[in-house]
Length: 107
Image (cartoon, rainbow, N blue to C red; front, side, top):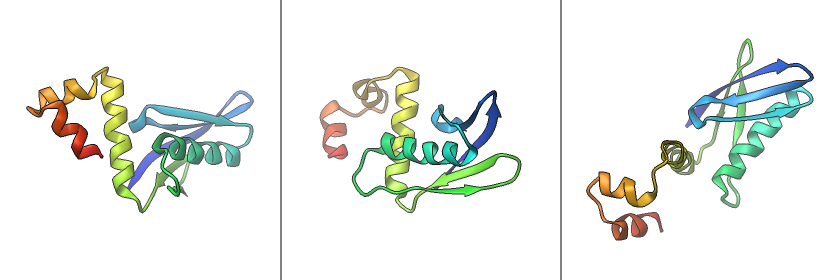
């Protein structure tokens, strides 16, 4: 699984943006911006041993991905839930599940 991103220079810094996660980081160089994007996603997933790869494209486009699709999907759902301002209980209620069922599925 991969998420699309873009890297571009803004003043003194290079910015790396991953729109689907509504996330951005920066570096002093383009290489550093890619490293920061990789570190940002690893930190957001927060699972020991989780690794990502950067796939550079043309004109500042890139993809960031991992063979560990389960954790990337989990991160995407968590970010969308957070950005919508919903709690886990509210999401469970909207889906017709109890908080108990959601908690046990996540463990």
